[in-house]
Each structure stands twice: as structure tokens, then as C-alpha cells.
Length: 199
Image (cartoon, rainbow, N blue to C red; front, side, top):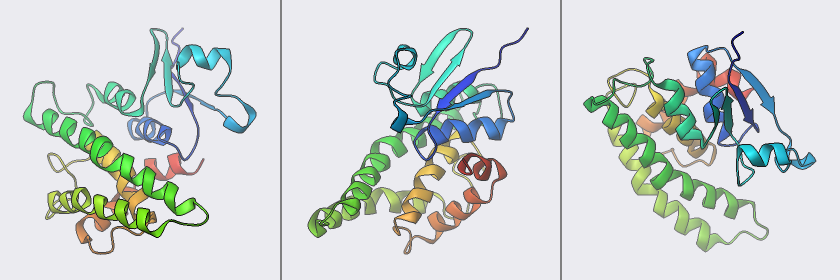
């Protein structure tokens, strides 16, 4: 009897990336939605899966893997969503995945957090917005004249960057970046994205 991998996740978090990738692959899997407000990420069982009690976690017969980008790269191996090992295109996928999480994600999180505060510190909001301008402009330039970031087909790079640029669009940061804005619209039109975001 084959046991399908299980994804432990919380909607509208970084776990959505792994949820979305599973939908893109159409791979058999099980979903376990956790509710942090009920302490479901703090249980002993989940702590054994993730020492910091975060999501997502992908559990298979071999064991558990955490960190959303690690899960995505692992699941995409051997599929069209990740170019062959050792290829230049594989290196570019890695480049954009790590660019997203190091240059964009942290700043988006800080900006979103500042905007939720009462009262809002306008100076800090402006500072984070300015810091985001360069990496977002770099993505806009990279997307000029192309639908996707690597090899003109959808890959894990587009999934990770797409999750971040749709977030940036919700924060109204893409008004002057037409390529990034069009990319965000293409991402949101994908059925797998829509299914993952419907939770």
C-alpha cells in the first residue's frame, strides 16, 4: 500500500507555496490544515515535525521536511517545474528562488507588519517601501519581454517569485512596474494557484 505524502499547512502563510506546488504537479497527497489559534502547531506531534512549530511540513514514509522552498524544490525534482540537475537553467531557478526569499520576502513582511500597526509609523513604512524598490525593479526588468523567469516556461522560480509579487501587488507596490504586474496577473490566472488560495 502506497502512502501519499502529507502536507501540514496554514492557509495564507508561506505554506501556500508548497500547497500550490502540489496542485501544479497534480501529485497525490494528503492535506492537514492546522489552526494556530487552537494550538494545533504547538502539539508534541507537530513539534517533532518542526522544531520551531512552524508550517509547512511535508511528511512522507522517509520522514519530515520543512521550509517551504525546500519542500517545493524537493517535490519539483524530476518534473518540468525544475530543470535538469547541473543545467544552467537549474542554476537560474535557484538564483530567483533565493533572490526572492533573501531580497524581497523579509522586506515585504516588515512593510506589511508596519502597515498593520496603530498608529502607523510613516517613516518606517517609507523606509521599507524604498528598500523594496530595487529588488522589485530588478524583477520587473528580468520579466521584460517574457512570460516566465527561466526558459520561458513556468518553474519553481515563478511559483516562489509569483507568491511574492502577488503579495507586493496587494500592498500596491507594482503600480510603476508593468512587467511585474502582468506577471502577477498570469500567476493569479493559474488554476493551481486559485485552488491553493481558495482555502
